[in-house]
Length: 96
Image (cartoon, rainbow, N blue to C red; front, side, top):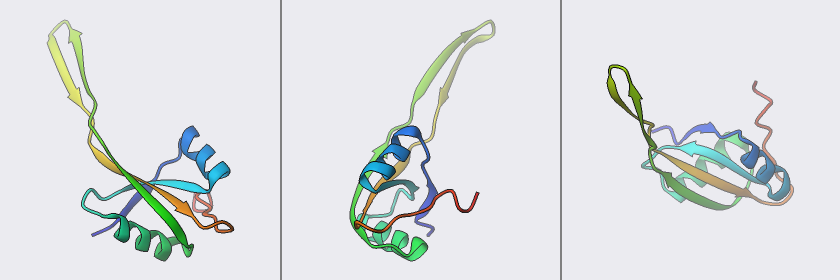
């Protein structure tokens, strides 16, 4: 099972990483906090202080078109915010 799916690089997540050393990742839905902590420490070689998780619900939308009503739904995913020990950092832009 691949725990870390991808990092979240948004304005809010980047601000949190710069100010409070907290990085955000999309993770596997079945992963718990201990597994997420071990995966981040193994992948990036840092020490994790705290892990917070959120199950993000899918967004539903409707559009009214000439051919009728179209409904759409985004995927649900799990998001983890990882607080690192002071002095450690992750460079997410190094692999781009």
